[in-house]
Length: 226
Image 1 (tube, rainbow, N blue to C red):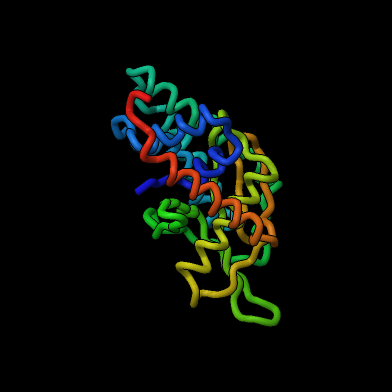
Image 2 (spheres, rainbow, N blue to C red):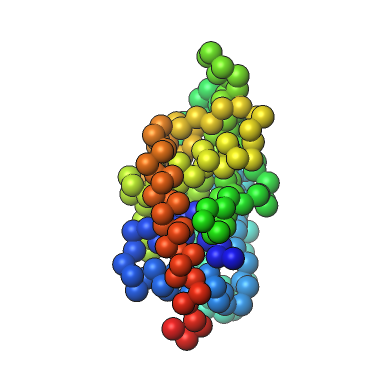
């Protein structure tokens, strides 16, 4: 069964046909597992966010650890440099991120998937948010981090991420509260942008479903040496 991350799905929606096939090829025939490229930056940033931005020590600690890490291979050097750049970028964004009125918590490292047209979508928000509702019960939401500099989010693709986050909450947390569009948003560390969540999701989820239908149709035609 085809499986993509929500970030890769968004890249797929805006890509040309050749790049779309490359994205699917990379997903269908992944290279040797190398771990999460932005692991140290992700851990430090999520710890900082979970503290409502009150504890910045995880960022400083991660920088110290990365600077002392052995880097004998070129790939390791690139990964260390990318993580340091990501942490520095996030530090420069602190004034743009507001967690007023919400309670952030670390999300689980593994999370249930969404499925559309026989395509599995890995959403895995990094931070879960809760807030008291005015007329209804609790409001819930989440933050998704985006690091890639080769694929930059825009208003359209970030809106798709917000819509998918809301659908993930509706599907897997039906008893936790009502998903709030404004509380489902993306922090794009790669471009130093905080993309706001969206309220309107119907058209965006139709687009997601349509794209997944295309992916399911293409998937059998993707070969390793395509």
